Image 1 (cartoon, rainbow, N blue to C red):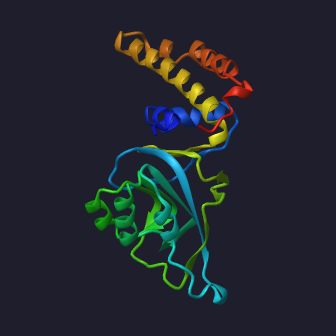
Image 2 (image 1 turned 60 degrees about the horizontal axis):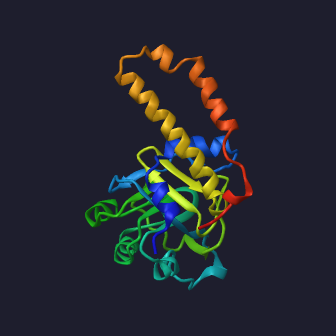
Image 3 (image 1 turned 180 degrees about the horizontal axis):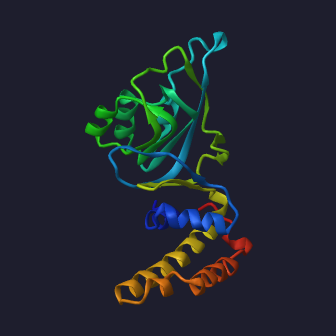
Length: 233
């Protein structure tokens, strides 16, 4: 079955979506997560993994990410809440092979990943905060999956919309998808008009002037806010 909202999401870049989220006062823009492999954009629904420090009580825990991969459907985006850890990898090559097999759209890791050359050969799109050769074995465990996780102060819930491209990553809450996408599409139309004005030779001071800023603010204030847009389909 076609996911209408994912289709709309994939036609918008993260900058437009970030502007739309800001216009609606919804947190969802993640910073510093850049492509580390297969530098292509992707969009999909979130499946979440939460990582944390290993301890005596976590001995023998399942390998991180495996439950999410076993449950993944084509188009899933796996979001790993690694909480900014840069010295230990929260994702690697064997997991990436499983992701490719499952048809996962992309991986987002708020922390470090490893086996980057292998991941590039696989063609899997991965956004992360850092890379390291150091394994998580013995130091990091999976605390849970398929539950709300905190990523840079943004709550990511399974089923939320995730968009990643060269500028970074944004998360759109499923419950607010229609509202945010409507706003982003209106902003896209305005940007297209501005780009056409530049091509037509209109002075940049006019294209990017105060009148434009007022128009943008007016666009924000007229964004649709009806309850019918608060859906998750």
